[in-house]
Length: 420
Image (cartoon, rainbow, N blue to C red):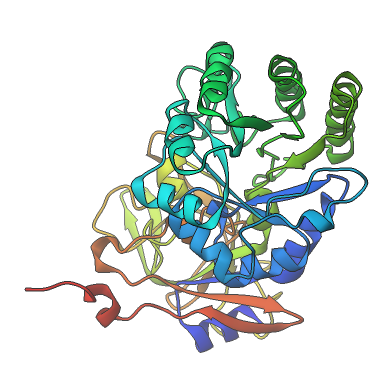
């Protein structure tokens, strides 16, 4: 189905996902014992069901994400009969957070969800409800990395994880509470390169030795790069796996038992699959700068306003006959692309810090379609009803056919639950 047909059938703005791309990205990581999707990147039930069928398990950071995983067909408990080659069983859902709110503590206790603790206080709170549980520790190694400071999840500037120097005390607290530390997780931020990813493996190995033989699983976290800009490339997945596999084998030799090796990608699995289709509704000049104003805003895709993130863009004429029928041959012009919101920051072409930038695009007319690309991660999941805008529809394209997997919100949906 082409871009114009999608817009005619489902309206704009619209999220569209390529199922085959998601499958390919899942299979890219087949060397790892476990691929655990950080579903906060893209939590539509149809996407979760697709990756479940690819053998990928999930991470949940809230009660709502636990509920989504269950609705998508995941079970709460590990299938111990399915463990292979002496490896420990894999937990289909792991709750990963720095706190328990009361609802999430109730959920993990009731359902028996495995917990990845990012704060020491979670240990006693869990022990009161689930005596004798096995837990994973998320450790902050004291350094981080990311394409924006807001995506840096390590070091003193990050709230995430248990500080590496506190591990001996945390292990004592776990022992006193009667909990066993069976897993270790470390993640320093998204947008990292192979050099920084390798630092995580060395830091995790040091902490693993402190924890000792109770460990049966180590997680490399996420942060695998996705190329947004020309010239950017994917990480060397083979080299990265070999680095971690070598670390795993050293731990197995030291501890005398098998260690399950996990990776926890988020945007790597879904970013490149996703597109925002939006319509050009006005073209104007503000002094020397030309603006294209479209019907999607930061209520639709927040990454540019949050991080100054770059997304490739394509222009599709309103009368396009195919998905490949983008404007070609016409001389490109520098334009800024903005949305409909009553906010000066509602600009898709901006740099970190909120400075308006320009993008070279073919000449556009009102009614043409703008496709914002690589929008399948931290796209719809961050969408909002700001300015009382309805959430967009989502479609999954599989085998050349587009299936509606989330209906567009209606004005009635916006006020449901409110009273005068």
